[in-house]
Amino acid sequence: MINLKSKIYVAGHTGLVGSAILRKLKSKGYRNVIYRERKELDLKNQIKVYNFLKKHKPDFIFIAAAKVGGIHSNNTYKADFIFDNISIQSNLINSAYRNGIKDLIFLGSSCVYPRNCKQPIKESYLLTGALEKTNDAYAIAKIAGIKMCESYNHQYKTNYKCLMPTNTFGPNDNYDLLNCHFFPALIKKSHQLKLNNKKEIILWGNGRARREVIYVDDIADACIYFMKKKIKETVINIGTGKDYTIKEYLDKIIKQIIPHKKITIRYDSNKPNGTPRKVLDVSLAKKYGWKSKTNLNDAILKTYTYFLKKFK
Image (tube, rainbow, N blue to C red):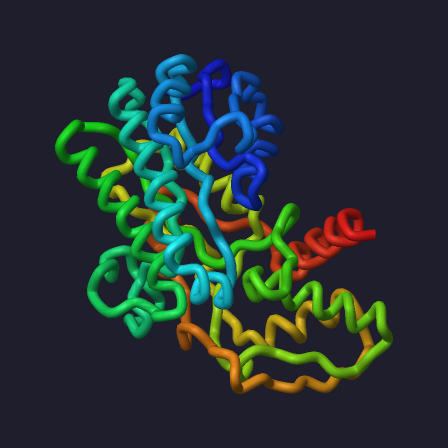
């Protein structure tokens, strides 16, 4: 049983989700938490990962380490996304098993589900249709991680759980407009609008694609909740169960960042919309007693406050 004295390893502790897990663990009183910088431990190196886990023998592992990005980077650097992610997760999962570590959580993504599957998306829809072409390499890598956890649970009786978060945002996000996800891009574009006192903003696609988002602290909360929860299933969706169009998200962000300002939106039809709609069915997580807690408007304000501190 995991307790406050258990040794917990957070892989990817500097990233959006990993840093939130680390903050949450510390705030809840977990003091025996280990992590390593990339220069200290290359997770793509199988021997080094195995030796690290052999030496430290954590009781639990969070696999939040991954190569991530938005539509542009996913579609441009497909080879990097599939190789890096498969290498990282395979090294961690296999080395955990070989070192007798029975418990871990693997963080996947809602993009593992088919592009045109029925909404809201149930866990059972995995591998029932074709993937979104712009991020299929990343999705296939994450699916491989899910199947690896399922296979090790089946063959070796491990307790490897896979959480599928929806689009995540919050402190420590990536704001590179060419390579980030849509939500931090909207925050940065809105901030630039405020800074430059302009009235026009450019959106990729037609603004009608529907997405679900969740504040990263809620993802961290789910990770720690399911770390301690006994469950039958390997895969569980983590989200809010609510979705809005990209244009509606922009409206909400503008109201927080530049209230009372009228803006003009110009749509760049040369850029892809991606999946038409993506909202998760989160009934399984709720059945186990977990649901998201952070109000969207509050989450936007918290994220923007952090953004200002980081980029002032």
